[in-house]
Length: 598
Image 1 (tube, rainbow, N blue to C red):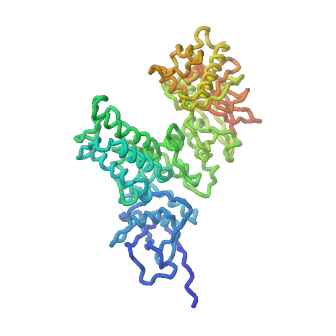
Image 2 (cartoon, rainbow, N blue to C red; image 1 turned 60 degrees about the vertical axis):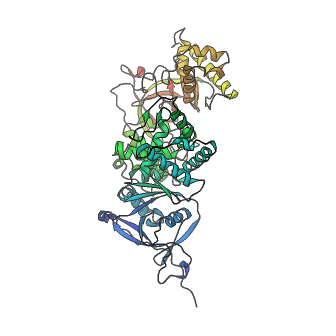
Image 3 (cartoon, one colour; image 1 turned 180 degrees about the vertical axis):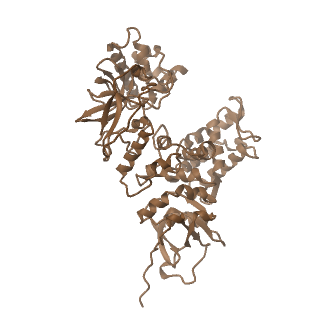
């Protein structure tokens, strides 16, 4: 007798005009269909797919999770089988009820992953799918590494901060127990869930989010209470009568106890977890309408100190996964579309952001063309690690940089084909000479780093000394500002130069002023000192070359270096050019020309 062949799930097409989605009716534990096919005998999870219109306001739970590795396990969908990831199977087993069906939405099951057209159409509805769900479960995975202890403690802390109980922190200051708690919380923060890019939207737009790890869970608003507390201590204590923490004496025993508890926990929160929780807070309570794509891209996908951006296996999702949080998504109406190449997605996004006036988006183009995978020099490649821009992100003594000044001249963005872009700008000068690379780590305790800093400072001082644009006697003052790209005006301390020149950089740190200057030096990264033909001194990108053009692009807050290449230019990167950062060079009637970038 020949057995019936296996039946792999065959999806019935959705009706997009009806706003149809699929929901998975998860059957109770120990459920078995009356006529179970032979290939489903050992399956633990059964359910059925239902087509519903979002207009029908069906109550369901949305599942937010990381797909995990490539291991696949079978579930039964009607009389057919479907392979899903192990992590999703674990989540379904946890969510199963003993007696009742559970109506769920999970992308692996509810979207036909083999149908690119359906996938694109359903991804367009993701924001609404999570926003309209009765609740969203953020599944971190099975219990492990004392995760139950960590979530239980977070729940208790949230009650002490925002609700009815006062938390006795002294109970958990025993060094051994505190070490266990700290390790448990650190590992909870490092769960793969928090590093998945799609999670940002799913977590932010949901009505209610329950963060679940194994059988333990905590509502997202309580998690936010605790993270907020971590950032307020020291200097505050818990007050059971109000949400906000109460200011108190930093030398009090209560604050000392709080510091002992939170010292390690604070460092762990500087992670994707904190970023995701605060995106939800901003979306739900602050902005409500969302942020611009420019803002969310540059705040989410850019690496910074102690922050590694979330990841996605599909590079086009660097754009698609964030659109649901934006207030300008209609300006990118062709997305998401998985039939468009990654290069075209990144290029179209860049053109639209530049048309919106975000010339500063060019500061995120940080790689030589041979390292970019087919995108023009003026398009940020989100497949590579993009760091916080060294220049345009700094806070300065005189406020944000405004190299374009208050000129009434308007930028005109034009593109003739997929790789050429023409922008209007003012030619300032060309690079005549440049110095060594400055890529700071932490200077303290690192002799090679101290020597590198000394060389960096000395090269800037030498360029300043030979510049006809800087009056004699003001060399130290101007050099100290250039070294930190005028960061917060903290460089107005030329007395530090004398100590630096004596080789005593390691002594920096004895005063608050010196500590601040050291931190300012560390804030500037991936630059080389340079001097231009006419004597402008500044900081250039790592890959600067003699002859590169210093240019102010209209609407740009910082200057850029361009490199002539045939009839067009390659974007080299942003620059700090002392003396033109606040609109000095755009006063009057400067000569404006077109620069075509490729």
